[in-house]
Image (cartoon, rainbow, N blue to C red; front, side):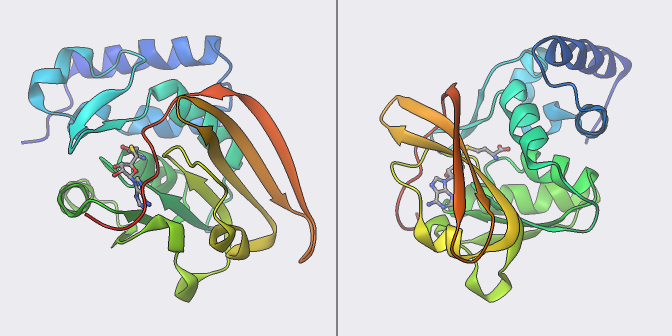
Length: 214
Ligand code: SAH
């Protein structure tokens, strides 16, 4: 049963304050994160630390991103109501839920069938209806392109050209890129069909983006 107690709500508010102090100051993003009980996405044994600002295991050797990272990446997306957003790395489904809260039309790809299945049933139970796809994020979703925003929640060794192709003109992709443990958050703004502007932000850490499905 999904229970969001007063204690959970209190811990969540405290977390949001901490995130504000760290620079996640977009009120819409904080409200969205305040509406999504993070502990629902974790094993019950992790209940007590679900609102710590840290990445936590979700099975399959993967992690739910640190709340600061979710807030920061979401803030960088400047989500507009109704826009089509592609997420690479559904994982627990938490980031998808936050994007749904912001009114986005969410598509999300996951390469591990177990995680895809778990996220699908949990999000439906919570009343969210993103389009969850089991597949390889390196390919994107050409049949649903273009997307006005793309968010990659795993660390890519290179920038997938297919994703840049599936980005709408005027759109933005937020993606951690780099080798091994040295990842940097990057923004790609598609200014025109032929011009893409890249901005490299600070260092970050993510599980790796892997080829193929499992
Ligand atoms: N956004 C997730 C974060 C999960 S961690 C959340 O809110 O919980 C990153 C996820 O990316 C992992 O589940 C991993 O299996 C997935 N992943 C890694 N490479 C991928 C790829 N090529 N395509 C799709 N998903 C991928």
